[in-house]
Amino acid sequence: MKVSSPVRELILARQPGYNLPAPFYTAAEIYDLDMDVIFGRHWIYVGVEPDIPEPGDYFTVKLGRASIVVVRDDDMNVRAFHNVCRHRGAQLCNEHKGSVGNIVCPYHQWTYDLSGKLIHNEHMGQDFDFSRHSLKSVHVGNLAGLIFVCLAEQPPADFEEMRAAMEPYIAPHGIADCKVVMQDDFVEAGNWKLTLENNRECYHCVSNHPELTSSIYEYGFGYQPSPANAEAVQGFQELIEREHARWEAAGLKSAEIEMLDGRVTGFRTQRLPLDKAGESQTMDARVACEKLLANFTDRKLGGLSFWTQPNSWHHFMSDHIVTFSVLPIDAENTLVRTKWLVHKDAVEGRDYDLARLTEVWKATNRQDGALVEMSQRGAASPAYEPGPYSPYTEALVEKFCNWYVERLRAALD
Ligand code: FES
Ligand code: FE
Image 1 (spheres, rainbow, N blue to C red):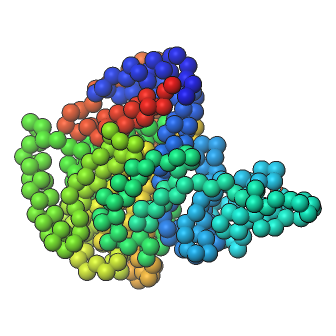
Image 2: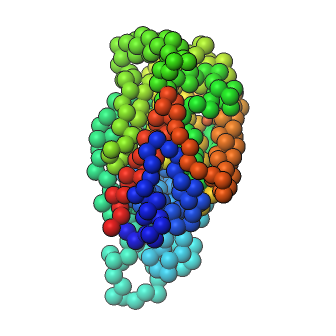
Image 3: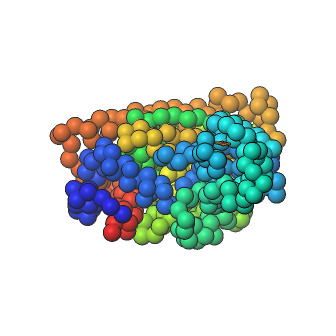
């Protein structure tokens, strides 16, 4: 990978324990590098199976300059293709979501089946070789209904380890039997790494997230005991132990797995107790949907959290699922795509109220967006210099940055 010498120097000289230098948040060259090395060669979370429940259902997603179409084929498999016609290259699907019998290019009507095979065109002559003009496929990783894509020719093989570890946690929540009842696309005016860094700590939660901290304990999100809060953290640990024993006895895996750095496909999970009624991430911590997920009867399953490098986090509760993907737009703007899922048989107005279901994370996303924007403005200032991480609350931010810099270093010539 070719990079300029100042950028190479920045990548090699990164100081552990400190925020990244400003160009990582502002420079176009590093943004291009991120789209090539990070978003072009890793497993990127893009959506859920219930986005495309029926054959022919599709959604599109932009990864840098690439547009990808993710489609359900006739055999119910999830497939992904580059959204580019093999004739003169027009973009094929121009809506974010839709449903088709075949994929027909709007320009000259070249027609592809749902396996990407070119099956029809006109005026190309008798000897035209259809077999050489299939859509270019993109790798799909399906983790219990969470859909990841990878643009690399050889995708990172350790996705399988993540799948093996995570399926027993996620599968009981039954994603395939859910429906997406809300998608919120929100643009944060900041570099995508600021979005991720902000997600990897809850140092900011109590002072910025009144709605979210109605139900969550910030200690579950990377806190280490400090002289100031050793007792509270200890109390939370004891609560975790009691709840984990109860959940594990019911067949729900709960223990923390922390594999965020030192590997290609980094991830972390833990099932975390919730405050107050302890049922869901809502204002009163009670379920937002009366029809529970899967075959659950216990409302009090806390929140199973799952974080992946480089672009996602997810919360699975007894009654609903909230899932987030981070999609860079340019060096200083990032799309955060949030989806709320409930059981497919739940009825709006009877089992759930959409405003109540979505209010906590809609508010939290807006608050996080404002924090990311402030961080971006600071990083753009000539006075910015990388500051130190808190050893008690920001270890997971550091792990994200360590992972990121490791991945760039591994790609240097
Ligand atoms: Fe697609 Fe011509 S560009 S059919
Ligand atoms: Fe936040």
